[in-house]
Image 1 (cartoon, rainbow over the protein chains, first blue to last red):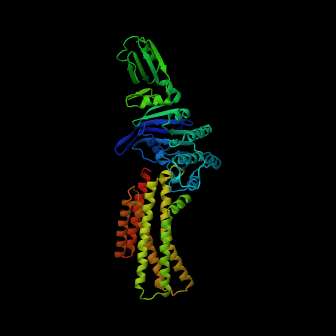
Image 2: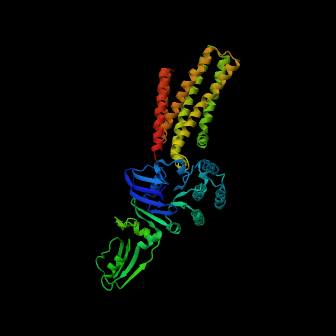
Image 3: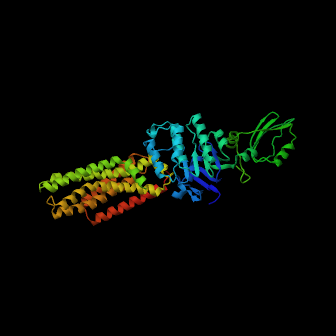
Length: 308
Length: 209
């Protein structure tokens, strides 16, 4: 099997005549925690559904654990845990019945770990799924997925609907799972502080295309936000490539640049700025810079080229 | 596989109870005719006919219900993320439908067999022949109705599966009653079952869950 747990090549998906994914390419290495980010409707859930074989792709190739996504064999399915967006559990089933179904249909089942999770989340086993709150459904779904001891855990906005305490509990559990060797996690979330805390690799989807796919630390190094103050009127155009955003206010220019390097620094220095301050960026700020409508360009570290 | 079949049976237990009830009524009438029946029992013979027609609608309803509830409650979307393939889910579903039709015939088979073996009734040659002559077409018709429901049920619109499968079943039952039982009808029913099953299987395999 390849070193990549997930691979997508030229993935295209049309839904009701609308292009949801437009040639998305990604590779998720084994043992990595991959945070897939994107605005609403960017195609995150669609990618996950295609990977799991729940949705056919219009074009392109998707491979999970060495098998084609559309025809995942039982042996591969048994190594995947999935928490769906909206926690898709059969509503008229009791919790007990859902648990039994998972037990019987999963390749692995860690009863001890599951009991521990049930106690942690205080899940009522006798209630129907439809009678559970959104948060409880999330906890149940997460517990079920984790108890199957998956080699690859896919979490589609797993903390949606959880309160702060439960979210923290989830993160701690996720960290515990990660600490078990060889586990790979692919997860989507809109809570970027969670992603920043957990992920070691980031993918950012914009208009159906993966515009960022690199390690979190590399991304932080590569995307720079600089406050440049000039002694007089700033130049009308700064000839640096891959500028994501540019804001001007008097003698001050704030720019976000992708793939920052020494060459770009040298070009900036030729304008002899009075000061040039590096503004540290959080993942959230990088995400906003890469996905806001004003940002016409974004970085693709792997290819070392701009995608417009 | 057993878990999947049991899940289908448990989820559709209403249909199983309904068919079992009809089968018991049918069997009681059959026993009555077998032991006490005379040549003037014409009106009583009409009851099993209506009973059978109701049974066909139950078979059809089960097929449509299985697919309709699967789509609306996203049951397969959950199952397909476990160590289960779509083929297994579909096979388990069809086996459950097959069992439903078998259950519909089982009490009658039991009664006929018991009567024949114990010879407690005047089981004439024609009565003994009656059962296989009725059972095969009833089974084929029942399973065909189930397959029509299965085929029509894969939609999120509640009216389409209900009306579509009902109309199809009524047409089918009418054709069988007009034409009568015979090898031509058997062949048509077998072909219809195969066509519906293949179409439902292909739809289920290629659809977004």
